[in-house]
Length: 330
Image (tube, rainbow, N blue to C red; front, top):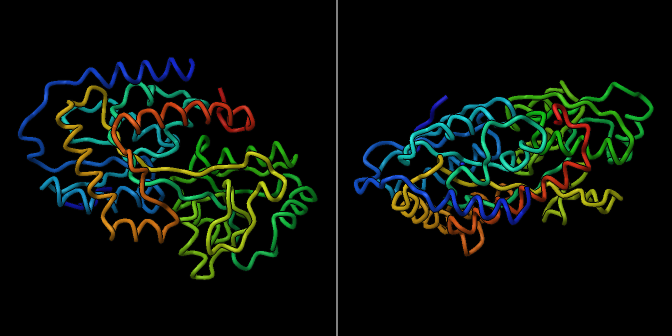
């Protein structure tokens, strides 16, 4: 689907990522002279899709070319990532990278090494926090209510996810591991469709990003039982998982922009400049804040984004040890 809006150890990963980043292809001084495609690895309406569309509308002003959003869902984001990984390093096919890119390698067979092979450009936004939702008319008013039901009715509770190695699935596995429950993850093609399954009553609940939950809460379609983040969310009347006794239950997200291996330095510089002008725009900031996201840190250089990816990949590796039950775990 296309919509027009005008890519060992922490030290080892860092060294490998730096080496790859320093080996660009030949630059094209006329770049860009045709439309650019942002590949989104999930269905429309999800976190990376929303972030990509918002920033694309801004970046096209600075690049002077339209930006196409192309959704390529499947395999927990690996389908879209693979498409960009194999793309020509000319700057016309880029990845709206999400947290799945630093999670997948810990659970799935992934053909590429995101931290060391993709070319980092920068963050689009940090957050939003992950929240646990149920349908608004659900009998479960608290997490404790829900877990009592799950334990009394083994095998009967399904949660929607956006894939087997995505944040919602990892959060389910972590909850099952700590609470000794057997909630089953049902994979949908993105966080938008997964949340819709909660609204329709096809599943009992879901861990989803607050950007997805907010309009559903406002429309009285879902209720938030808990926040899977290190701190409470302003305006959300729900405790954190840690407050409820679930230590290290932190599943904040991010959206970034990456290119295929060996993207030319001049192209990276132009994209980085347009990206950073866009994410500092007051209108853009207002829009992402309404979704529970915040703009990137002041240092949003390609190198800073690369360092973040390396560190977050390592953190997700530690988190994977807490959630061994995720589907397709290697």
